[in-house]
Length: 434
Image 1: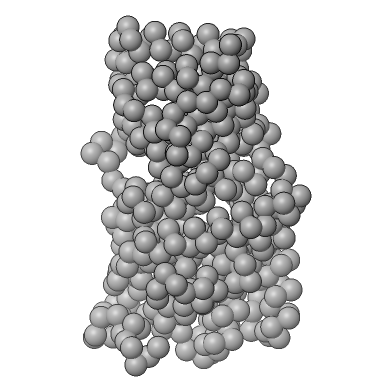
Image 2: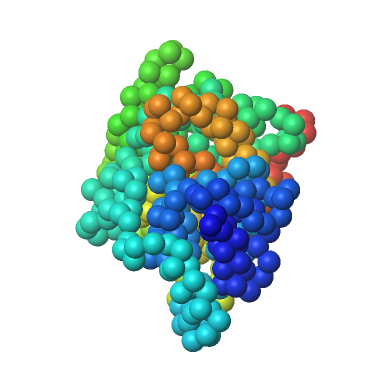
């Protein structure tokens, strides 16, 4: 009998203790659930075994990346409905232990085992990172950056569009184009840094060179951009040459810890600090502080997580760590500010732009979906599915205030206290300057 979907739908409700508002279609053609809801397609029993052997987020991600699970209909709606079952449940191990003592819960697990087939764990998809060695050494950081950024420049062109900026844009309105919003973000960073002709800017984690090119072309500064990605560096150097800026912009494959040619008048770090790691953050902040001239400014643009009541229970997002940003760690904005000030900085401004990242991510997802065939040809189906899930789920996380993103402006204030900052707060946003 074709009854896998009704049984699965009932078991999910039994396990979660709440109505499951997605429709389910199973490998045997059976369907169950609200007729007008997005459909969770369970292509085979292997998807269930993945969930049984790695309950929660990682098992779901493995099934998605391998193509054992899919969604038909609106992906955001589907992920929002799944969030209550997977991401927004209490992940404390004691809660699971208590659940396993519940006879009804154990019965549901046994029912799932009967449907899942042979009781052995499927191998993880090849896109999953196999971690070796200590975190955040120069070698492991290079490997982690390569995993994420060396997917292929052509692939990123599909997702990011002509701006080739892989960080949160700054939207004047939801109706702006992505290109205009990314231009406005780069310009906002330059204004916050107070860039003037003849100054030296260090762009840490320069990506494909967009910030370096914008700062040199629009503000007349000399720029050193550093990245750990060989592919990014080659692409950025070509863009610099095409823009006629080789005398103003230098792109290096270099670790921030190995930069020794300070002082710089300003430093931009846009979407890079998430890779540093909690145990290395003070070293990161101190290194950048030492590279700045007295009065120099740092603009640190960084994703932040929400604080927990018990910080000792914090764990890195399993899917992101295994498939997207290996060894990446998010901290709270309060911790970031504290560490920057411990390193000697004076923090002068913090701007949350959380909603802006949700808008940006939705644009990236739309571009990926529009260029899906080409993206699969370039990166493979598994990697393309990783990026679609990661960006859509991240958009929802920003919209629901599960994570945020902040621009922190800090100054290496000299001993006489002359910060060089304007008396009027945020004069870079004055209408007469736009």
